[in-house]
Image 1 (cartoon, rainbow, N blue to C red):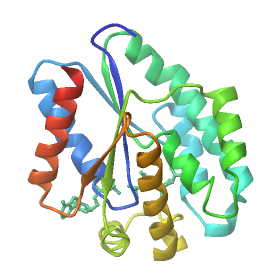
Image 2: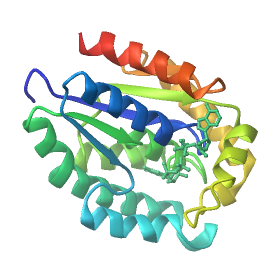
Image 3: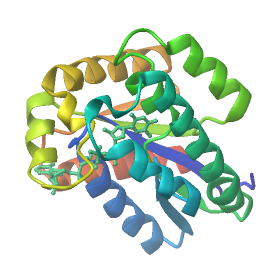
Amino acid sequence: MTARSAFISFEGIDGSGKSTQLDLLAERLRAEGHEVLLTREPGGSPGAEEIRALVLQGDPDRWSAETELLLFTAARRDHLERTILPALAAGKIVLCDRFADSTRLYQGLSRGDLRQAVDTLHTLMIGTEPNLTVLIDINPALGLRRAKSRHGTEERFEDFGESLQARMRQGFLTLAEEQPHRIHVIDGDRSIDDVAQDIFNLVQSFLA
Ligand code: ADP
Ligand code: TYD
């Protein structure tokens, strides 16, 4: 990485406002003269976008948690090799909608305890963490309401229901307590502008 590059991920349950806030942050950072790459997981490279359709569409029980873990990890490896690492090498700020923390929770905790397998695969195949993670925290019922209001086709995880969202929210907060230097919690249950201002302040002080 060069001095100007940074790898920043956004995490949070479905509907917490990640995509909305990523767009606003990218716009503000570009206006300040930064080169920004906005990307997402699962996806962010042609091969990983193909895997995205496999994991986000269809029945909730389409894949076991183990198979899902392999698919998400394959997608992440491709995304890292072809998109993230080249952008960091070129001195860009990489803003990524979800990264490995999502796998730690959604595949690691949602159906049985696969956390050890998630960590082992991460070490073997990914081995990279964001420099900064913005965790947008929101009430699960509100998140699900917002996510469902999009009426999209990628609803496989939303279809697991509110109890899964509640467990994922708690899991994200626990991760943030374990890694306070990397993961910063932002209250997402406020106006879009208020949330955006807090995130911008956080990222600016991080970059400084
Ligand atoms: P995520 O990417 O985390 O799933 P989105 O950014 O797509 O979340 O937001 C989900 C929905 O909620 C969108 O329709 C968006 O316009 C809306 N939304 C996002 N942030 C807020 C907010 N702070 N207040 C009200 N609605 C919001
Ligand atoms: P995303 O497109 O960010 O959905 P949303 O905008 O609703 O938050 O992510 C789609 C889903 O993929 C989300 O429900 C969480 C899931 N997911 C995993 O299960 N594991 C992963 O490693 C990642 C990156 C996402």
